[in-house]
Length: 369
Image (tube, rainbow, N blue to C red; front, side):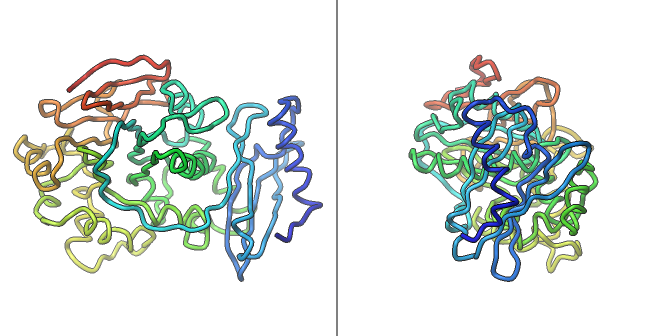
C-alpha cells in the first residue's frame, strides 16, 4: 500500500496510543470519518481532524489492488476509545431468507447513536468490552434507521460493517435491513442529516450524496442490503407489509431485487407500478399502517402476510408505539422502535421460541412464546 506517511502516521500512532493507554486528551480522529472513496483506480481514506478551533482533512490512499490491506481506526465518541476496521475483500448481495437460526437479537432506529448501540450490545452479551463478537451462532438483526438525527452516523455504520466479519467468523450473522432513512440518504433526501456531515462533505470538496454513492465503500456496502428478510420464523421489515405488497404475490428475493436498483435513484420516477408502490408510503420501509393512520391494518392483512412469506411473526421498527418493545395482533407482530435517544434502549431477544424484551442493563422480560 502506498501511504502518505507524513499525513497519516501521527493519526495512526495517536489511535494506537489511545487504544492501549487512554492517556491522550486531544484525539486527532474525533472530528469525523473515515470516508472511504474510490477514484481513478485508487482508494482514498479521509479523516476529519479537529483541533484549535478548526477542522482539516487527513488523507491516506492506496492502489485498488491493495485495498484489502487498508486498516482504519474509528472513534466511538468516548475519550481514547477506538475500534479497528479492515476493508472487506469482496461485497456481495445479501440473501433474503435464513431459516435455521438458534437465537436472535433485533434492534431498530438507533439513528446515529453509536454509544447507545454499544451499551445495548454489551449488556446483552453480543459484544464484549473489546468489541469482540460474543453472541456465538446467534443472529443480530438491525431493522433500519441507523442514519440521521444523531451525530455518530459514520462511526455507527463502520461498526456494523466491521462486526459483520466478526460474527461470521464465530458462526453468527449480522443482518442490516434498510429503513426509510437509509434509502433517503442514498436517494438524495437529506432533510434529517446533521449539519456536520454537510460540513465534512464541503471539506472534502464534494457533496454529501457522494459520501454514500457507488464510488464510496459505505455506499457500495449499503447497496448489498435488503429491505425485507426472513430470519428463522420472523419476517423483518422496517415499516411493514401493506395490503398492496401482499398482492404482489412475490417471494422475498424478488421484492429485494425489484427494490435494489432504485436505492440511489434521485429522479423519483419509477418504471412501473410495483416499484412505485415499494417507494411510496405503502412500501416496506415507509408503511405505518400497523400502528397509525386513517387506514389501519387488519388481522386478516397480517395473516395474509404471514401466509404469503411462510413465517409465524413480523418484526418492525419505524413507528414508535411505546417506550418499550411492544406486541400487536395477538403477539404475532413485534414493534422494536423505541426512543433510544431518551434513554429507553431496548431490543427484542428470541431464544428457543420465547420472546423477550431486553434493555441496556441486561434486564430480560418475557413477552411472548
